[in-house]
Image (tube, rainbow, N blue to C red):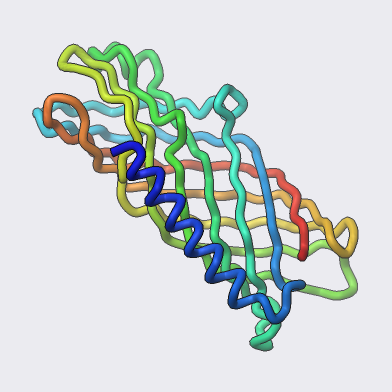
Length: 224
């Protein structure tokens, strides 16, 4: 199951990247490759297990702990379609959440995390507010995709430690890009995500929760 999920995620990313790169091949300068890190948090969320267990989880992000929070994306700006302010991006984000000590005590579980990533893969529409007289460019974006969390649950009934398909993810972002050279720029942005997670766990049960994340990202982009 773990290998299949990893292969499916890699295949989806490969197809999307190939589609964007192929469509932009006639004008490679419209492509932008970005990597980023930052500070990510998540508010409390309700957790339901099919055996009747219900509790509210308090989440910690631990953005700079191992494995760290990070992400990357490729953006295609629609210069060739006379829509230079509009773009399409494929974005991968390694979000993560840890249940806090109060949550574990309340649930009677010894371990509950999605820390080898919620692993969000989204396709987004972007709009940038370009002005050729300045080096900084504000932008907005929103999109939809999937989440493939690494489910880590240890409870009296058993243990779950595997990648699973979680469900749909929605994403919104707003930021400012600052041009350093013709090829390089840096950016600061806010990114919010909503992930509907419905995964199998031990003993034939299913776990459901809706996870919101908030992040302030700092990154660098290369303009091809």
